[in-house]
Amino acid sequence: MKRDEWARETAAQLRQAHKAELKRWPQLELEIWLRDDCRCVYCFRDMLQDFIITYHAYCYEHLLPEERYKDLATVSWNKVLACRDCNARKGRFDPAGSDIPPTVESRDRLVERVRDYIRPSRIRDEALYLQEREVLRSALMLWKSG
Ligand SMILES: [Zn+2]
Image (tube, rainbow, N blue to C red; front, side):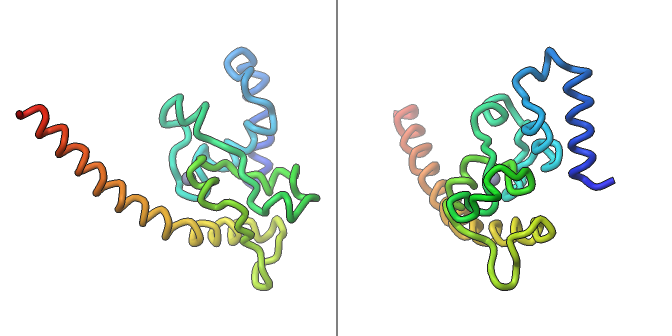
């Protein structure tokens, strides 16, 4: 069984068996979460790691930007589970091109191209964050020791 079909069927079964627990989860959203392994498709962040991530740090990202692909704006394969950070880094980047067509068959390759696009800015920010965190922690250590 293909992942998309499995996600659709499982979402329907879960919604039936767990009506009370899953009332915040419309069918289509549950399908997307299951299909995408409950992880950000770009950085693999576990979107179930805590309730703040699960409820506030996710988005349904348009793999192919909706302003350019209006007919794909509501198509489920073009909506991927992503964290807000990846969504912001991607912006309006269009992963399709002459080598990768904007089709469902190319979905995995389109996602991979977005990962490649996002990676350098994430690495830069992470390095900066580690430096800044060290400066702030050192300042606190000085305060607490003085
Ligand atoms: Zn992410």
